[in-house]
Length: 401
Ligand SMILES: Cc1ncc(COP(=O)(O)O)c(C=O)c1O
Image (cartoon, rainbow, N blue to C red; front, side, top):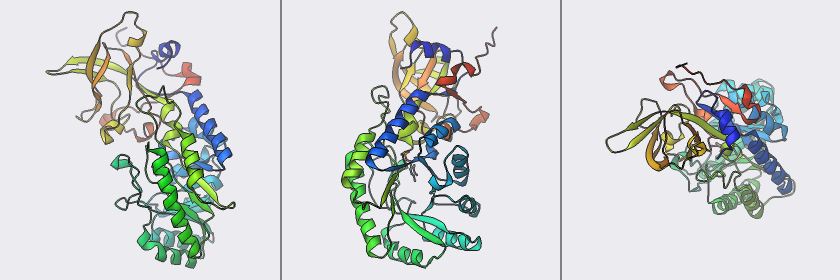
């Protein structure tokens, strides 16, 4: 829960907005930078989780690379301080224009997801007289034990190249004169909470695949294990920083690597999820036939995760926490204003008695929140407010005054 001073300041700002705790962001990033150095693992931040300029600028200043999944992400990451030679670019559907821009920029590597993509990149590099670094994203067919919408490493998923094409793949790479084979890339899913079990399994599978490529004449200089570390959505105050130690230790204990082989990871969610809170206000309290509704001014247009994959976010009434009497608690269905029945923040949530105007916190919203916001129902986009520049935010207008 936020402290009283901060809540008082937030209460003067027009809602809804994303509040970024920059101190927690720095703490998290610094902690990971330290672990990465100790374990000799290269970190590329998965930009898709959050593209806020200030966040990217801080992460790039710590020497991290960027993992991008679109041409615009590549350009944005570069403009936020990530050098081209530390930008990798994955994604199953890269357009010619996006490939061209990546080639011209001289990015670290394209993480290719199909044989045809390798062929196209080789041809474009030939036409422009360039040589492209190409890693190959492999689908290792591993169950990440997470939500089916964020599982990416099973054969039923569209990502990566599967085992049945390995021999063809090796052949194409050897014949493609305008690419350098950079290494192998994996990413099996997101919000992985069975950390040691799942990542150990990933490493074992990766060891076999790397050995297969090397036996067949391709030296694998870079092994990229992707992202996926989960965060604690239930109790963000107890665990504000994800279990990076276990992740790094599991990798180091299980990956087989030569001294001249680089190991990379691509955390997205785990670096940024806990540093943001979506701040909203209760517009109306309504008694339904069988339940009570709290109608908030933030909706699925601001944060789609609950509507999209039934994601859980902890919700707190910040104003009630400041009231001096001890309020009774009540179960509410907390909903947004959007004209969709799926615009629900949480059903049957127990909260202190809440009233119109109460300031509400939707926790752990720094990853896959603002980046997925839309203007559905022609709503305005919720802006960013930063803890270190709180006083500069647009203030509430009192329309009754
Ligand atoms: C290729 C790739 N790497 C890394 C990530 C980051 O995953 P996470 O946010 O779970 O760490 C993603 C996200 O889906 C991804 O697609």
